Image 1 (tube, helix red, strand yellow):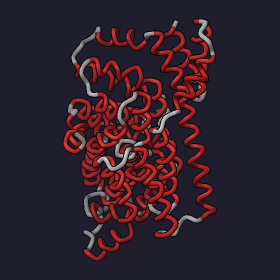
Image 2 (image 1 turned 90 degrees about the horizontal axis):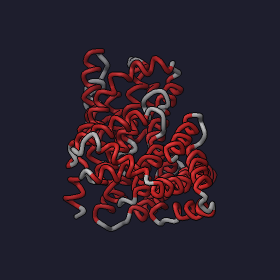
Image 3 (image 1 turned 90 degrees about the vertical axis):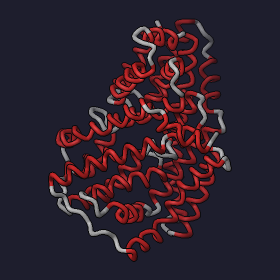
Image 4 (image 1 turned 135 degrees about the horizontal axis):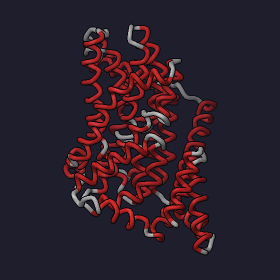
Length: 424
């Protein structure tokens, strides 16, 4: 019966019902069939969001809105151009590095795609880049957003699996950089083949001007990472400090935010936060159903029937998550599947923090994959490009993306070395 309930949930999601309602409705069906008091729904939902750690989510969402509205994008692009603009495919390389820098501020692939894509896709087209390539590299590089701290998606994973948030955020840093490097290598060879332009190496004067303009914004991810690693802040406190820092620099340093625009920023962050928190509340009910019904144990027995080798299990899980990512948003897939898959990973000796990074990275690749991939729809709209043409251009980019997912899965030290070095 529990598999029928899970099937109901999947059908409802595929049919377009919001994930929170699909989770709640399928859980409600199970409780009614089993004759369990429906008061459990309200109790579980309240318990699911009654968490101090969970405050990090609205805080980081507010930081992203602040910095995105505060005129930070062009300054980040200027800093990225100093570092990589002279490489083959200069502006495409800038696109990738800017995604890395912007991810340390927004923690969101969607915010990254909208902010950078609206500036860089038209600029790349004017400089002679194929529109399809400009859009595709923007979508692919935005995958870095949820991997490098602060990551909203990693925070959600930590909450639904009850794993420590601080180590999870730090664990995403090296895999995120590895993903960016793999895309830069791909861009180098593609730019050489298509003869895309590059910039002259930046002078000391130009570099100094770019850094003076952007360094205040780029200090934000440094404050977050150093604060968490040193133990000065919990992740929630780091998020609160980030909000205060963002308010100060956007109001008084860059002066691009005023009371009127701040009201709009608060409204947007509130709506996004409510969406995430309501989905998490509904997911708590579903997680309780999963625990009571024993579906985790049943699924674990099924998977372990193939092998108990951790590499074999990780391979199967990565393939499964790549497929799931084609049809569900990363945050939604984590809410549904992380409580089920994480205990299985732990059972075969996989570190749960490492598994969290692998899961977020793999599912986020789905965000840039058809048919659901929201990042593809965003860049296609910005570039005024047919979706099918964009997908064809994206196809070879999945090679470095998927390769990075498997490398991260098979080499846990990439995720754990910073934690073992600085946090233990």
